Length: 344
Image 1 (cartoon, rainbow, N blue to C red):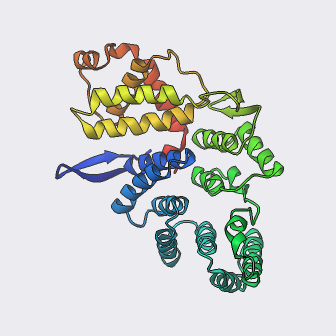
Image 2 (image 1 turned 180 degrees about the vertical axis):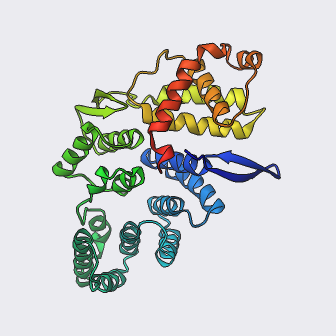
């Protein structure tokens, strides 16, 4: 598979940074699902500055602005996306109209919905969504004596979440199906998500995000999860469900080893690790020794950049030998090739 590269200036030098687009998107998605919206905003802004018309950067950034309450900036981005036809038109339209509702510009939503509904090729599910949004806005316009309840009403689900794209082979479509879920889930929707988790299809990275979503929405008990050729039983009530503490331990080891001598490589290794541990969950990472996995991630990062690594220097950095981490580095490679880094 042809590897994508992107140029980036660091200390006034132009550096080829493999998979920079994908890594920024993946880290941004991870921060979004963890509700760390400011951190996600910073990541999407980096990519948006490098490539202003990147659909996921623009969409992710607008979602961050919405979550942080900056509806003016969010609207500016979604308006531009609609004008330039950036990203999935109907996903962007849904978000744009939601922003207008948050800003209480109900007549604009009604007018926009009516114009689109006059088109002959509007998909049935989009027609239903537009009709519901338009009706909701008409009701809001007539309820002039209920202004105190407007904000709370807006927070309620006003249309059913469309989860059909979970079964699309494109991981980007799978992500779009879940990332815009900000309201509660119905029993049918929870069942649809759990069915997706137990299916033989679906990106392993996205499946972990769905697990996080279910946990965030209050789901409990055991969930069947099929990924990486295995089937697992995951207890949503388990503390530190997603290996967060181990993830941070390894991340600190990577930073300590690489940051001072090669910040660019350190950033890439961090991104690979953050993606890998999400995609590989809940497969057991053995041995659960931070130095082993930090070293393995470092080795894999060197490999994909076509860089050699000195055995003695490696031992100084991690207090382990290269031979001790080759198996783990190979597993990281396998997971990365199976997951969304090569498909988004």
